[in-house]
Image 1 (tube, rainbow, N blue to C red):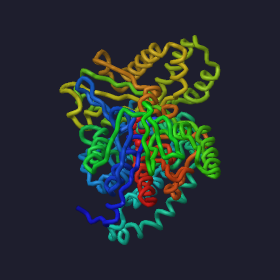
Image 2: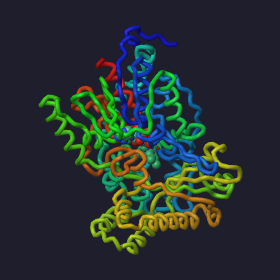
Image 3: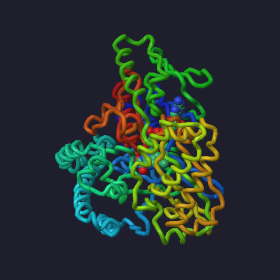
Image 4: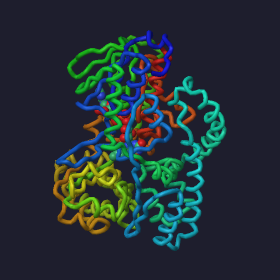
Length: 539
Ligand SMILES: Cc1cc2nc3c(=O)[nH]c(=O)nc-3n(C[C@H](O)[C@H](O)[C@H](O)COP(=O)(O)OP(=O)(O)OC[C@H]3O[C@@H](n4cnc5c(N)ncnc54)[C@H](O)[C@@H]3O)c2cc1C
């Protein structure tokens, strides 16, 4: 067992963490490891939040994120928590119409260039310029994630890391941060100066969240090479964290929704009016909820004013893009799919691009909404499904044990707008809408890349932005925190990330996808660790 100073073990106090997603699990496990008595409270019957897996009829699927990126964070965190997780590579393919590229190494970027030139020969010069930019960004990504994130490392235990890795890396890292700051503009706008053909611009950007910062979007080619998949499914990561937390003596209470925070009394209340008292609270769930349900009476005037100002900003913000997913059980062996693509596949059936379909046309539909405009919406849905980019995950191709013999499970998804699904629901034709959407997606994909889907689907079900909101209570069904289209009410500069976990109330910290932007699994883990460190420092 590694050496721990005696004082850390004696200094036991009660910390409550709300939200058993990956951020809350990280914070709770880390604090438990450091000898704190923690209680983790989760609304669902199982932990994991958007890092979870489901099994149906022997088919294994992801309910949230499909594969993981280390980003210098996940593996070092597992190491610090003494967790062993068996993983495999999650290889990526990219396809447009009949062109499909399997991304194997950094040189695949040049094959991607050739693929784009074959599809858009008149844009050859623009494509060459773009590829040079992506190549430069890939070098910056190498620096960014070049060493284990020092926030995660227990630096006192690893002095060699400080002298051999951290100090030589630091100047390069600071230079890279400056480059990233210069590439914050939305990728759609940035590309206008480089690529003239709007269809080509769409094809490059339409599977990113709207207005994604350029660095983040254009770094994806590097990230495609880094995806990994826990054996048994993504949910195994959360399971492993939960198991370790219990081993370390942490307490977990599931099926419990916190709906009031009485900050002046250091107390939270659940749906049954049960009160829980804390010395420190880490909120690792939706932030709008925290600000809505917190009662600031009995706090100082100064803190209350600061809290009210923050609350106004939070409530004016908007959750980011959501996702629609179609889950399929297919009576066709894995081998048939393996011949076409890897288990993580970004596919666009038409090189035309979405144009205004998912922006202006959708906004117009929503602005002029009438409960009986079903026909108009279905026509629009036809265009959306024909022109969109799909993220297709086939768990069995990553880990063959995850599909019944001779059969294949698929998760087909694309970015979706929460408001559309909500309006359809309120208009009373949600079931019909979902059934039309499923039919359209199946028809587009069986007419293009997966002809074997015709007549081979045994079962299917959908998971929509409304399902995501119901499952994890995330504002607007967002999957990675705040929308890039509105002012972001939290920290979004890496150099300031340590402050992202502070709230105006000294005994309350925040963690997870809502507290730093852009976010995702690695940043949720990082902020979970940062929040835990703040609690440790305070006590
Ligand atoms: C389809 C999909 C694809 C994705 N792809 C990627 C990707 O490629 N890369 C990437 O990095 N990320 C990706 N993500 C996002 C990533 O999964 C999330 O950003 C991350 O898991 C968020 O973790 P979290 O712990 O911050 O929040 P969550 O997972 O939302 O956890 C919050 C937890 O709090 C609980 N909770 C909420 N309110 C309360 C309450 N009042 N009381 C008690 N408990 C409460 C919820 O039930 C939930 O378990 C994807 C997500 C989805 C859905």
